[in-house]
Image (cartoon, rainbow, N blue to C red; front, top):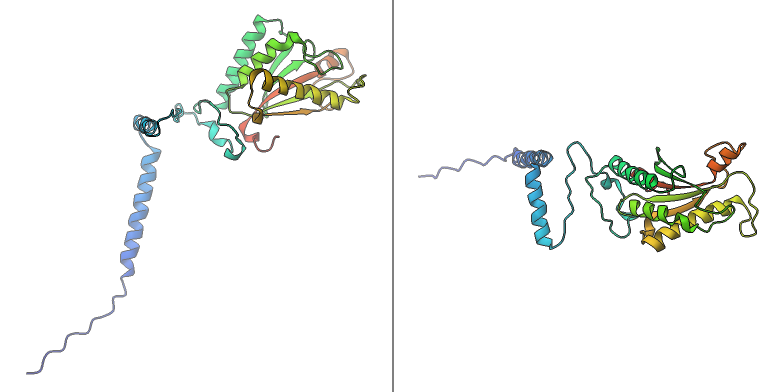
Length: 250
């Protein structure tokens, strides 16, 4: 008796559906995980932080922002940071500026600096404006001993925040009469640099967060046609830069 021939196997042209189904499943799992992370329970995340602290044997800073607030420190470019800084990332820039303003205000009211220190919030950041009076002698860049208190207080107020600090010197339009400083450019720059040195040498301020510049009489805060205006223009400004200027500002 002749054997029956086996039916010929047809090529399966739909095997790609298996790979496609696996890919769709992986996508579903990925987006489900992302959604779960975005709605994670705060208590569970804090437990995770505690576990990390125990595993690494070190201190883990609080990483969760307060309700409705975004940790601004994440905006800082890692490459621009030198020594790691100690700060609470849950604080917003507004919180930091408000705290600095309050601390300086309390110190100024207690001391004799009232009227010589002005705090301004601008687009660049928090500006602490120091009058020349009491800080420097006319035409000089050496800090008066009587200004030690306010400079130390400013350094302590700014040392633990993550923001960069820029110190800028300004003069009035009267030409400087000094053999040491040929023009107001040199005088304004020297004054700013002297305060930078004070912060570093007296209070061990991180030097990588500081910069200095001088503008002479070319960025006046008031008119140079009156004595009152010229007095306002002879100043040093300590600027706590907003984090978005960490790269664009020196």
